[in-house]
Image (tube, rainbow, N blue to C red):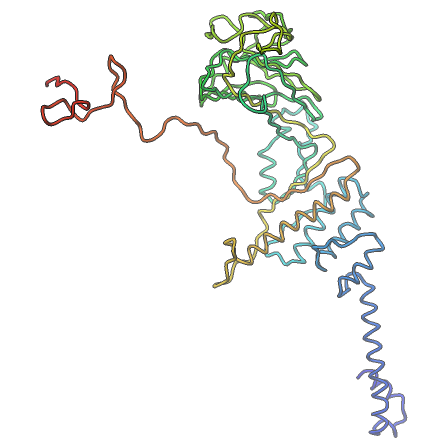
Length: 468
């Protein structure tokens, strides 16, 4: 209509109101209107933020070699391209700042595109992020508890603050041997793949063939060992835990038995250590980076029981449990059944690695409408859809970080749900129903209802009447 009026205004006054002239000009004006609409669509298709079709957006983003992933709709793809473009062109691509800016930009844009009810707002300024371990420049140097402050990290997540974890610690667990119990003189290897040395922890569980007496665990690679001057009865669990400084504590079924631990340095196979070499309070053996050769043996100590179990002398590395046609006669002991299971644990500082933690507990979905259908998995449709979107966000962030990480560096983004953790260790102290036994000279007998009475009580369920 605008084009028609413009064209009529250019005619002499005599022709402007003519019906035939108006009809002829209207035909041309309509074609021009259609041409203008097509031109606007072409123009919009060349503007990434205005493109209506995802295929058009893909062709524009192809200039930056940023392809669309098959799970992305137009809003997600637009946020994806903007976040990757800024990370690649503005922030140095493989730098930590680029990873932080990508995570912040994409998370914020993704939530706006999918209309999350409560948005998790991420700052693009690295100074607003909690960095873990905490960099402290004050004197004296920070303690291990300050450097690995898990409480501060959890509080950062609860306070809607993202965390950048550089060289995160990974807890490793290994059973020795892979199945069954551990027999005396057993040797096994533990590989510490971390950047730094770690401290060895252990869990020993007594087997029915036990008890195990005075068990010692020695790292032959470093010459350091730890010994428990006591017994591990069948079914009992002995936990040996190192703290961040390497000091070892021992707990057996809820009882602190750390006073029975001793650590030894400079262990030489075949040469017994002296009493003064046993250090208390004990320190856990170190695991240096790389392969560590560990050795398990129960060995005699003064005033510690276990004569029929432990070795009275310090064995050398040629000594073995005797096996037919396998070991030498003069380098063998009579075979001893395993008396305990052994699990060892340690923490590694992951090399060339960082992790981004986001407090996803702040992200909420719309409340279900009254009468809304419940799906097969027991969830309301809106809740199930929101959880799927959050999983898609985490997956997309990891895909983007994978593109931005330097070669040879591992990177991960983790969305932490809201949770409260109260660590505790359970142990069995009894069971129900309780079955009581009445001990007697001939062994245990069952409790009876009463004294023996002629013609009233059964013979095998009665005792002699002892009177009043």
